[in-house]
Structures are given as structure tokens and as C-alpha cells.
Length: 151
Image 1 (cartoon, rainbow, N blue to C red):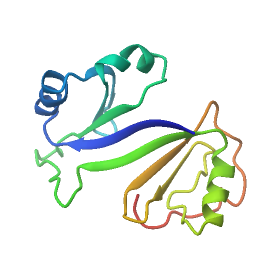
Image 2: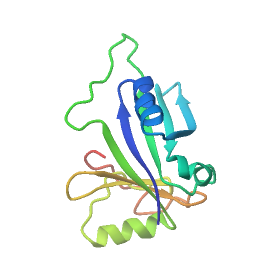
Image 3: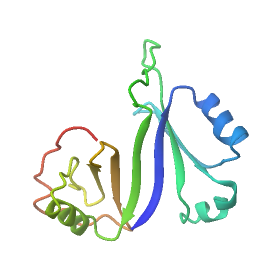
């Protein structure tokens, strides 16, 4: 398993970048804008980890900025809503999820696509699991499994 990132939602991307980059000294390593989904992802690495981050070998902070709605209203980040999730890359997402289930852990978002799953810690922290390399071929019981709760 490889630790990937911690995702934080931000209400003002420029203010967040000023804090994390100008203040803390983190460095933007990549950015993704999803026009259809109306969000921007900015990945930041500690200054000593920039080269490792370029090779996908360093943990990152992912800032997620959800664009304002068409009417101009923005999502209010209350009640801890700004913390998104921890993310880990795993060698076999199906084996990992089967192991977690055997431990009594509910798979909230099953890996139907052979790529991504979500679970929650006992304290409610969301954890994303991502398949290393190519997606695995879809297989049961995961393909037919419904989402449960929130992640």
C-alpha cells in the first residue's frame, strides 16, 4: 500500500494557495480542472518532496475547489465538510476490499470499476482506495454491489 494524498475542500482557492504555498512553502505539482464537474483539483507537495511527487512517489495535499453554482452561490464548508479523505494506492483493490469486509468494515463505494473504492474509519474519516496500475477487470460481487452511506 502507498499513501497518496489527503484531500481538503477549500472555499477560496487563491487564499488557500497563498496559505499552503506562500505561507507553508508547499509547491503546486499538478492541477486538474473539470469543467463538467465544476471543480478544480490542485496537488501540493512539501518542498523537499517535489521531485518525488513528479514521479508519483511522494504524499500530497489535494485542494478541491468546487466552483460556485450557476446562480453564483458557493458551497458552505461547515461541520468539518472541508476535510475530504485520505487516499492509498493498493496492489489489488478486490483483495483489499475482501480483507476489509472480513474485518467487518463496510465498503461504502465498492470497486465496481476495478479502480476505486471508499470506506470510513471508526471515527468517520473517509478513506479512498485506488488500484495500482491498470484497472482490474470488473468482477462480482463488486460489480453488483450498491453504494452504502456517504464517503
